[in-house]
Length: 121
Image 1 (cartoon, rainbow, N blue to C red):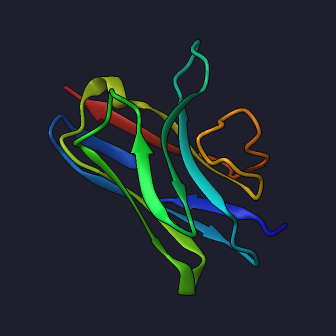
Image 2 (spheres, rainbow, N blue to C red; image 1 turned 45 degrees about the vertical axis):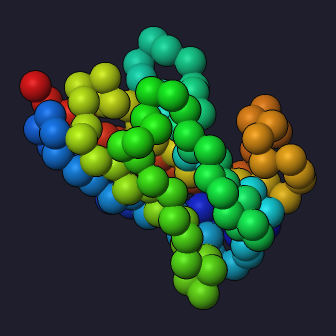
Image 3 (cartoon, rainbow, N blue to C red; image 1 turned 90 degrees about the vertical axis):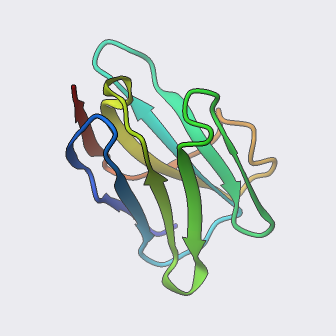
């Protein structure tokens, strides 16, 4: 499968916004997801979506603030993050898989390199 490349991370103040992008070099997938990991913590899922049917699902910690969208022509998925909080600080990863169902998080097997998001008080 093609590579995944994230971009758009940075440092913002509490309440700010960032838009992360994940570009697939060659392929599209049935499922795309965003995950994050803070130092000393395990990786957690943030949002998941089907590239076929849409209908993204979000973790309770981000629902109402984060939005996943996609541009199939560009093989790109986005994570729009609004009303950012310090607890959102983490390395954010884009992930993909072809195996359904999308809500099963343990078998995402294509990963980007990560992009750092830092939210200051």
